[in-house]
Length: 235
Ligand SMILES: [Zn+2]
Image (tube, rainbow, N blue to C red; front, side, top):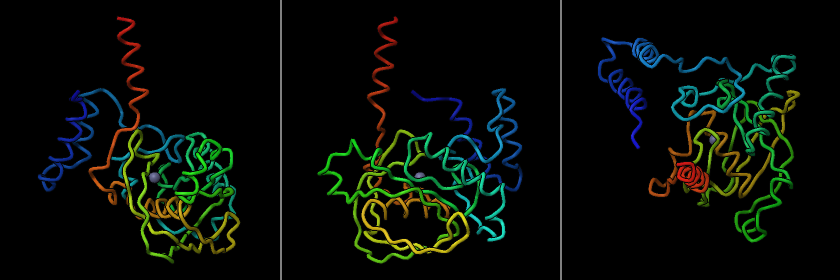
């Protein structure tokens, strides 16, 4: 199926690229919204949802956090909110740009509960280890073992797809915790992959920029087939 409403959105972007001097993207976007009588985005960040690919915030370079800001009630509330969205979206890592904030902040949590359904062989093969809730503010990453591991990867900002991505085997991150205290964190295997992925979000990169293109696949066929089956039964 070819969604014509998406076609207009895509055309608007192409026109903006080729006639940037004559027509602004804002005016095309407004025209598009008027035509389809809907607002593209009405909520204000931090969002309760995860921004999807195409949202410009995901392509911005995130800004450093002023250390004086970290102790403020507002900032602490925002950290809690980031974690809340992570829990609700059933994901293990989330970066601030994904909830609409171009800040150098991300959070990781990988509990035993999350891992209970992962087969021990896969867990061993992918080097998957649990990680308690950890906030990374103004993180600086160093690759400590550049040997690359290739595994399937997903992202909350590219729902229902996955692809194979190569990531370094071991990394080290120096960052501030949620109280503004500096710490050094080392990770290997799956945790290194998650952190490398979140660091990419702070640079405006997505896994699709690193993936092996031919491995990019839709992964929601079971749900889609069930819906289609239900439609057929109703007919
Ligand atoms: Zn992601």
